Image (cartoon, rainbow, N blue to C red):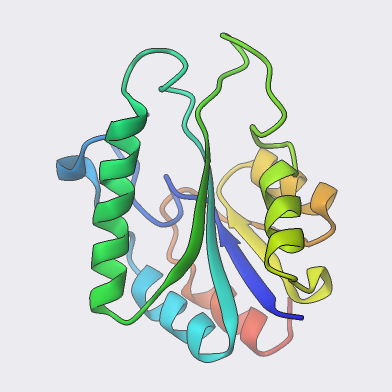
Length: 165
């Protein structure tokens, strides 16, 4: 069984300062500490996943194509650093428009990844900047770590790798 790191996108991987919704490549800025942390996780044998709510799609603020362009941009930045994301899961729904089974705090995507990729939930973590990220992780049976929005995740990475979290 594989161990995994799940990451929220906006506010964890990329900065959301000045933008509630990040859906344009020109607004996408990688947060400090992400590249070295993801390299360390990869080198330690963790599979990497992104789980993100993208409710602006349901609200008509941006399209699924906009999200795909941002994700392609993210993956190209990471690939230049030899960092590979196994899968990006995103929920296009929003509670104000329609209910769904995949919007965090639902554990839907994490549970799906655990099953589809044969992941060890006892050795897997979710790093997010909201309570719903932590709740999603715990409901899926993995450890949830809540960080402050746009915080450098480097210290958490080091603690995970040392077995302190």
